[in-house]
Length: 478
Image (tube, rainbow, N blue to C red; front, side):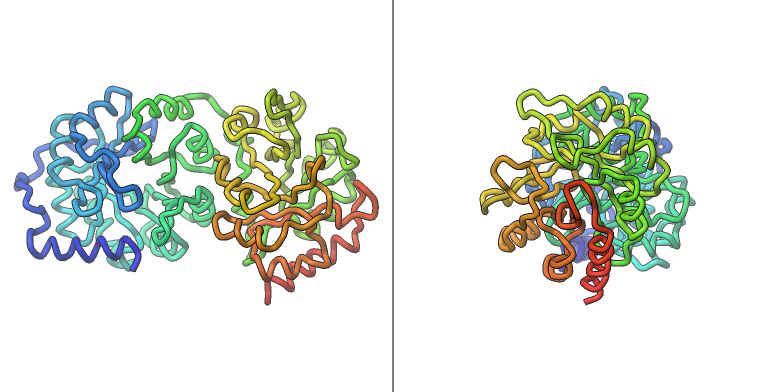
């Protein structure tokens, strides 16, 4: 039983004993105005006093006072938790907030079970309701959606996985929320909403839910095709974050050239891992890797025998493949070369791979989008990937004095330890002779291969490249 099933079970018991209004006296008919939900900036700030994953967040918070803070900071959409057992909320909170701030758009966030729940939400002053797709079959979800819309309320349908997405497709809601939290482990994976969003086949405003705690998180969501974000715990603890979030929404940022993560997870893999071929120095090698099925090409812009020439990126600009610049920056005085910045801006590069000792707090200010590569040498390094804010971190072998390209493997016990805590992006000693075993044993989301594919430094052996992809295919099928 996951947490939603447990909450629903208890909520049914409460409804049986206390009714859908949960003992709160509500008007027989709606007396508060309806306000359209989802106005720009589409930042939904939540009134969340506690949660199953975090426990008590702000247990003594007055809902009206918290809503005033949000309104004073220019927030137009507020989510009010009304579930009492796990979130310390109530319908009284919702009604009081809407009565005090009729111009705010109020989302009732609860575990809506039936049509009467929808009707009670309307009378309590909700302008929108959350419908959690995993709680309902497609026909029930459709009935609840239509009931809410017929009353004039908006609806945010929440999706957690591909089964939810299939049900939601039958409804085709105008707003769809994608939750990055795993309900069985409570872990946040910011890539999950992007993966699911890639499967949307109807016109909808996508909302990124859970895990938003910085401007970088908001930039990641917007660049991945989301038009709104829902943020709870972070703004309950520090409302100053709202200024940072609004800044991301208000800045005239062209996210059309920063869509790496959306493009990556839009590539259909049929169970195969993503493949990055690094150390590309020739047009011929780039063409061959792309033809064989690589997802990302890596171009080294650091002191290396595999250093790429900028002219190469211009020659292959129309090649249908993602392109990463691999850079090694100084830890204390990092500076991204202007040429790399320009290539990101004009679309010759899709992403920057930081492969040096760059600090977690520096990466976002240096380049966006980016991901980090870290070198691991012992069990104490297993938590390294979790220190960075990017949705994925590439793990590579530690060799003294070498940033990468050594052809050496990470010890298996370290790989398994990392996989248990983080999605596995694996580099270091990956080649045609071992990739089948790697795929079978570790099931990485991405493998990064370079030196073991070469006939000489910087020059790929096309026979080895072909065998690499053949072995990946075999390993995936096993």
